[in-house]
Amino acid sequence: MPANKKMLVLPGDGIGPEVMKQVRRVVDWFDKRRAVHFDIKEGLVGGAAIDKLKTPLPDSVLADALATDAVLFGSVGGPQWDTGDFSMKPERAILGLRKELGLFANLRPAMVYEELADASTLKREVVSGLDILILRELTGGVYFGEPRGVTTLADGTKRGVDTQIYTTPEIERIGRVAFELARKRRNKVTSVEKANVMHTGVLWRETMTRLHGEYKDVELEHMYADNCAMQLVRRPKQFDVIVTDNLFGDMLSDLASMLTGSLGMLPSASLGAPDATGGRRALYEPIHGSAPDIAGKDLANPLAQLLSFAMLLRYSFDLKDDADLIEKAAKNVLKSGLRTADIMQPGATKVSTTQMGEALLKELDRLAA
Ligand code: IPM
Ligand code: MG
Image: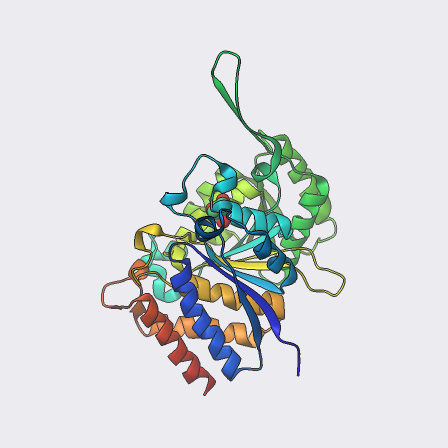
């Protein structure tokens, strides 16, 4: 018997717990019906942890995250925890996990499900068939650079500072991931920065160009970040893999996700460097946030969280068939006309979070029969 896989589940705040509940049902289904078994731990993060334990990322949760095979993360944040103190913001939980686990490579696929092509705010012909991957550097840049902070000057005015830093090893390791992912896709990398304005951008461009020498079979193009934002709306299908820094990646991935019609559909994976045994630290989370306005109402779309679990099976455990099965079930449920409120279309059947979870389980039963 192969050893059980270790998974740490961190539902977080807002809609996190209710979408995670549906995913737990799918995990149970896998436990019963497939060859894959999990030892699952759950933990408190974000606002939920602040309320109970006075910190967004308890030490015990961090220790569990360092000891597990893969983390399945929900979402954190909400207006009740919006304070000026950064160390007490729920967002510290996810930023701390990314940094402490060394999760430098953030894969954010944006693909259009044919059934949802009309849910995009862009014309069907612009987005139909879209399948791009934003690869965001996740542990460097202005999110973590020092110095940072707000100081009061002698005349009583204030000064805010954030620092953008990138070193060649940081750019090279994310660049390698980009080229390697492109080889498994359509062989094109667009490297995005602001080399016309920023020193980090100049270094980014130089480093990517040099690294390209090792990946001559892949096409490399450079693009300024502002132009990339424009091109993503104008002609998104020109892209395959977009590799960029932490801040540009944050913004461009929100933009790209909306091309697809619903933020509620998109998963992401954050990966560390491979270790000696070939494994790597990893965390999987939906792209959407905690959506406090609809939390607790059984309205949220559980598919992004579910597809994040599929990515976990694929990237952490190499369980391609199981991941395919979940993705197929999700597609079929959409094909059958079921929609949560965020992706509702004329003529479709509106369902709750729980009903969507149930439909998925039924479809998994049917596919596995
Ligand atoms: C994201 C989010 C986070 C980020 C927040 C919640 C800190 O927007 O994962 O894209 O800015 O990275
Ligand atoms: Mg973001």
